[in-house]
Length: 103
Image (cartoon, rainbow, N blue to C red; front, top):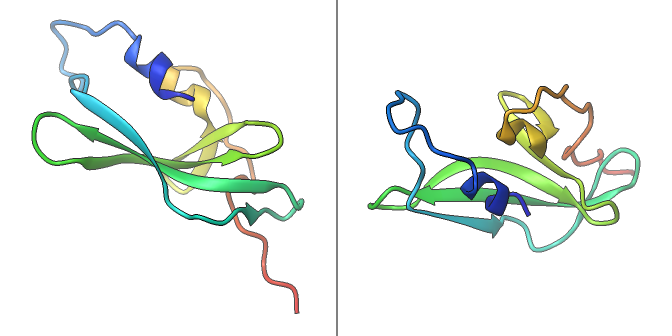
């Protein structure tokens, strides 16, 4: 998924940025698949980190079943997971958003 590439990033020894967590885990936050407005199935997830104490939620996102595309939430928008690796990407409108129920 995305945890391995994140763990392989070189850490900066003398930096004010947040240190690398001791552990990371991915939690599936919903047991059933959801569908977006285009009818594509996705499953929401959360990534938790631990720096020695309790687990803390780091970010949330979703994985699309058919394509395997991963998106993570930044602010109110969802971006391709490559944003976590420092890539400059644009938000994807409608990603990870459940389509309104049909009546």
